[in-house]
Length: 139
Image 1 (cartoon, rainbow, N blue to C red):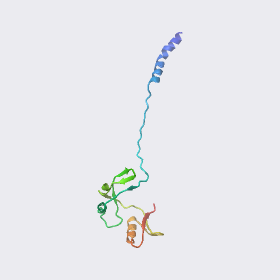
Image 2 (cartoon, rainbow, N blue to C red):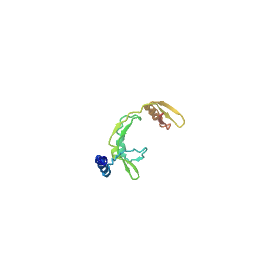
Image 3 (tube, rainbow, N blue to C red):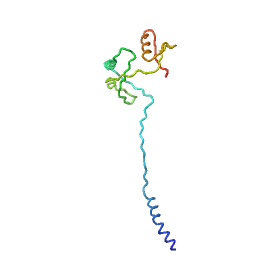
Image 4 (tube, rainbow, N blue to C red):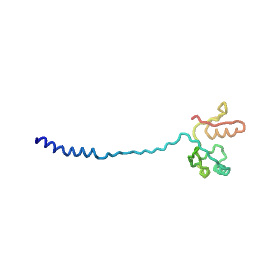
């Protein structure tokens, strides 16, 4: 009897702790992860006035046809697709570096010229009245 009573008193803290853990509300940790997923392909439209187009063309300083400019703008999603802000587009431009690598000037059936980007654009532009050339890269 003494052993049973001693065991009951010794296990009382264990029973108290177990019953306290059973009735204690459990804590649930929720992790929220937000990710921005860019669409693979976006078709957007912009309507420019003649004045806006002229303003954009004024940013080009060289008379060379291979000169490139980067125009930054805001793209907004509307009910029927994406819309490019024409006012932001005509605000300014940064010079875009010419791409590196080898390029080819091709006609409908054959490669007519190869070289760097600027020389290929030069070649295609010089024959613009006689042929419809496109400049492509091997990549």
